Length: 356
Image (cartoon, rainbow, N blue to C red; front, side):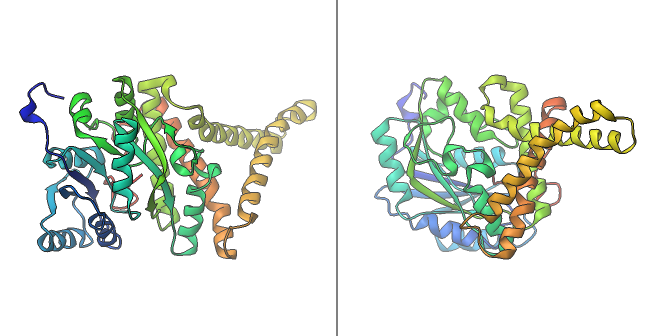
């Protein structure tokens, strides 16, 4: 923080929310924020991207009806740019990141503030609990909540409170953000992981509290899901290029699956054309074993209790490998050539989207 105490922000909470094409979700998200029962001053700063579905008009209407809501522009529609604009516009000592595709549980902010105070952490996060409406979205949500789907990060269902590598959304001390810098605007996805890395490198703690819950609504179509995961994988590959071993080992499983699939296809073609035969063909067939095991895993996940109706289970058979292969393919591209200007086009043309 600055040495001059005149720069110290007053006690209160600045909720910051990047928004882009969220007509079906924004009002519920805003209501879940404004319903938080806090005994300190509160504001909600919406960073508005160039929505084309009427979201901006909804935001303007909501702001006109409640003076706690403030609006800032995010014309590039990039997550970290919008977050930084909202944080800079914020007036208070605690910054709580929220997303338009999420809903805070009752008591979330009070509990988070208590945990922040109790632990002395710089950033506190909780569990991202995905929910779905139609069978496809329900299948995606179930896999989001499963370690098989997203690799077992603490905020996808961890039960034990303690120090963490990163935090979902995040309840942050403004003084620490001022100290380490805001979000890196050159990172389009995974910007939260990179910020938390800087927070930890500065000697502060990032804390996971499983009592904090946020409802998250995933993508509603297969094409959008594939686009989202490819872009997210590409940016994780970029982060590996930049930060190497600081990335967890779990991030390397999906690209390994992609490489294994490519090798299996090549072996299959060589076998069918007779280039590989006899003992060499037999040895090469070993590559099919882990893929067969993976296929059995996908079937087992789809058939497991809690998998929903038949349509949801059938979607699971497609959604799980889509998540892994799209993410892994994006990751390989990100590692080999960098993420460049890769954006998540799953919600608006070639624009980025403010959601994980």
